[in-house]
Image (tube, rainbow, N blue to C red):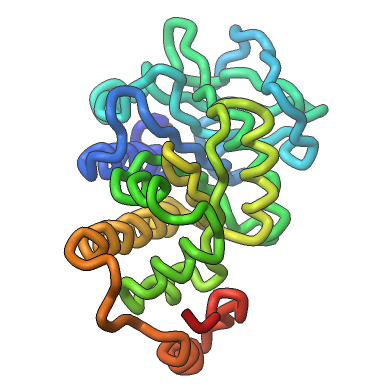
Length: 275
C-alpha cells in the first residue's frame, strides 16, 4: 500500500498543514509525532528500509521498545510537509532497549527526527501508561497568544488553568484536568523533557514559558483541538487584559462548579479557589 495514501499519514500531513495555516509554525518551529498502531505498521512495512544506522535518542524509553512513530524532521518546515512529505517527515523504530531509533521510511537525504525527540518520546511513554494506550499523538506548536501570556502571568499551573477556564465554558470541558506550566528551560534538552513528561502524568497540555505548547491526544483531531481551544482562550485573555486589566465580571468558581455538575466533569478543587 502507498504510504502516502494511508489514513494515518494523510491525517498527519493535514495536521501539520492546519497548524501552519494557524500561524503556529514559523520557519522550522514546532513538531508532531504519532505512535503507530500495529495495523498501521503492517500496512506499510513493505516500504521500510534497513539502510539507516541506529542512533541515540538522548534518553531511555523502555516502555516504547519496538514501537514505531511518524515524526517531523529537525530543521524541517511545516509548510513544506504537504508538498514533500518524504523529505520532511519519517517513520522511526525504537530498539529493544528503548535508547536508540532507526529511520525506516522518509526523512530523505540523511534527515533526522526533530530535536525535541526526547520530549516527544518521554511524553508518549507517560501518556501510553496513563491513558492505557489510548493516547497516540504529541503535538508541539508556537501559538503567539499563549506565549505572550507567559510574560505577564505567574508561571503557575493554578493561575494559567483558572485564567483560561474563565475565558469560555468550552475550556473546562476540553481540559478539565487543567494545564501544566514549565518555566523557561533550554529546548531539546533531556532536562526539559523530564520536567514536561512529569507534568504529562497529570495534564494533557503543557506550556513551555516563552516558547510554546505541548498537547497530547488519542488522535490528531483531539490533540490539535486541545491546542486550538487553549490558544483561542489565550487570545481572548490577551484582548481582555489589553482593554481592562481588572475584569468587571467573569466565570466564577461557583459557575465552574455548576458547569462541572451539568457536564459531569471532575474539576480539581485546587483550581476553584476564590479570587
